[in-house]
Length: 463
Image (cartoon, rainbow, N blue to C red):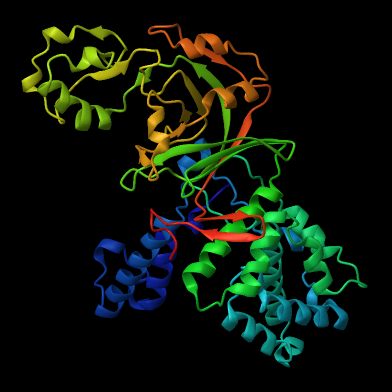
């Protein structure tokens, strides 16, 4: 973009100053005697201009190197682009009446586990009869957009839920679908009928919805919120339906594997401790690792293993651990002066050899995420007999890893070799037929038949 000297903030400042102090306009700047009034105006304009430059500089060299990307369009912006008109609800009396129907339906959404903003909806309903809508075109357009934003958000939540995973690479935007549903709503279909048609049809969701309507008062906030979260998870899972997936429910300490809507494997799990919680996420298992090494995370190495090594001379040998540097080169541990090391100055890492004694067991299920979280076997099966299994540093230990691997790899795996679990067996990576969607959720209840069973909330996330 081309800028002339007339676009310069300083040029504009001097133009205003000259107009303010007309007695000196023909004198050179250095010879002028500035009045108090002029100095005040000049100072204020300099401050304003530099503030403008900070937020919108005229010279933008960075913009040439890396142009700023436009912000993604909001759901309501997409709606009006598809509508091709500035108004939707106030384009006809029939649509204005339909807007009233939508607001009347949304204000009762608590029955479906969706908390509406009663004050906002009440104001919108009251404004529908305001004469200003007819008289003020700008006000009418803004009001039209507010109604659309509310209805579209409701339609989206009704189908997709309102889940905020720490990491989600499975769900994709369906904004165009929601816009299309509203734009192409049949005139013969009432709002109530459309809501019923769009509502989640998942059987577990139906049990939760009926339980919410029949057995819980909105004043029972903890139970209501628990069921509401569970309904949102069921909406999300139904809307992002996968032919093959793993579902881990943290509070339940269980994992389930489904294929073609049929439960194939269910097992107990060990999940993160309260101090090192397992994060909720939606990701994919990309490969199965047989006989994995365990590269001990640095925090575990210096806080837990280092003190034990300093106390017990043969601790490393007992647990098949070796010391390695940042490049993975093995360091002779007998040559190290262990007493001089602390959590702050320990420069090495620990790596555990493969085999049945490895903390990860003989199977590891890798999945994409920024938290280094994965599913794995374990060298201690007795832990699954415990009632409280919030014991890990965040990763998920599986009770039946062999069954899961056999299903994911369609039998293409040497099960006998895994069961023997020999130490120092070569690590191998195996690819499933397809990436396996994996949902790690936090839902402190479970559905048994037509009953809802509430579970403890160990991470205290239900507010």
